[in-house]
Amino acid sequence: MDGATPPWFPAWCIQFSEPISDPRLTAAMLLENRNDNRWLLLGYPTAASERQLWATWLALRERVFAEKMVSNSLDGEFLRLIAGTHQMSVAFKRAGIQTGEDKAWLVRIPEWESDSEDIKLPYYDGKHDDNAFELMSWLEAELLPQRPIPTTNTLDRLEIEYEQNESLDIERLLLTNTATVDID
Image 1 (cartoon, rainbow, N blue to C red):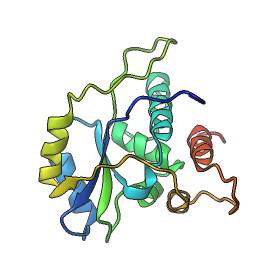
Image 2 (tube, one colour):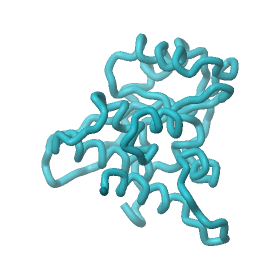
Image 3 (tube, helix red, strand yellow):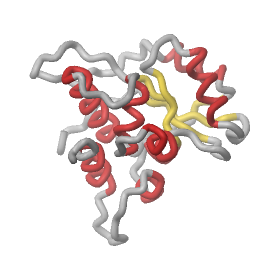
């Protein structure tokens, strides 16, 4: 993906009407009202770029076809890969929503065609927008017009070590974090 502009990943930045008081209740509201397990909430600073989200999608796809998922669900595995950990409790702490936050990313994991070696990132056609807005309503949240941006807050939240310097490539650190999550 280096150099190419990836397509828009189906992730909507949302702002809650009030800061989250209980992340489990907020997650339960999503789980109860979503139409499949491809919907999830990411903590606001953890989605950092289209490339990071697509790299996570590719890693998830690979694990599904190899039958090597750690989590029992697609949404859990996506969250785990973003967090860069084997432990689901650590994944929720790093990449999930947290008490006191007022923003998050509502994410829809795109489907994939098959286990063909010729992988093409699907372009988002808007077909899940209505469902996204319905979920925002259930979550008492509204859409914020922004896309993921890599910041040091992302690295701090995901507990990725780095040295502060002018040439810090946050996106590369995030992609490496996802690519190496299951290397022992």
